[in-house]
Image (cartoon, rainbow, N blue to C red; front, side, top):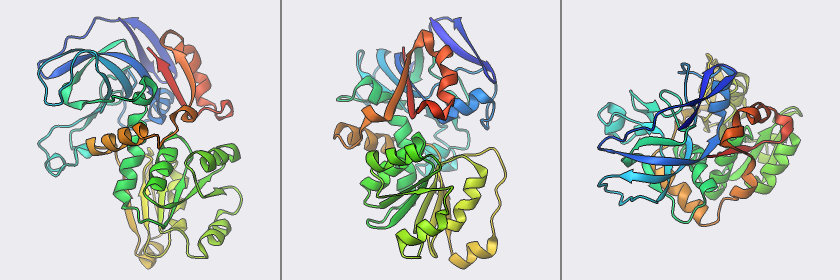
Length: 337
């Protein structure tokens, strides 16, 4: 079968590899769609934490079940599924409390071990979710939206509160969508006016703020001088993540959704003065995946507008560099296998 490896930063290679053999608790799936995520882009550029090369990228996956044994989900050959790519130990302190998304020994497909940029793959059967009623494209981006849905759930959004989302990339857009569905008044902050306009129409964000045009003044205008009670940073940019503290109201919460390979600092007097709550969101759980599937199935997420670029599997290597360029207008790219 055909497999694409990221051999080292900035270099892919297509190879012929053997068909995988499924274990007793695994399913063999035919990969049909692969979503390209910020993690993939960072890994390609050599900027992704916890990463070693060579690696098969791809963790936003839609597949078709080819072989599967007895399973509690009732999955069978021919079912279209999405993959929950976070493989947990099931025994550690996090797993025992239901936080499998931050297992002490977590191994993520496409990051810590080989992912889905190939024609077939063996996956633990209990990490597959049937996506009946969703298209293959929609099934592939469930994982992307689940990150945002998880962060919003972690944040315990209160209906009617101002929620500032920093960063209008795919993850940030997912955060905006699920914050809106939770009843928040969403404020989108980015430096790209075209992307901000997309946020306004797609999320929809009630307000937009250009980070390069005195954002503090604009936030004061929007919130009556009080600032947002909830700020979620989805940039994966150290400077942005540090600046985010200044946007939080007294008594407010800051959630780091994006991950950066850096040390972060903040003013402790300001942090204490506001009695802020600082949270992180890592990956997602089955509950988040199920919520996203229901939202897409219910027509609450415009997936057609979200997916802006695509390529055939054989053409992915040539197209990949263009997906790194903001000027191409890429929001979400999909690879058809």
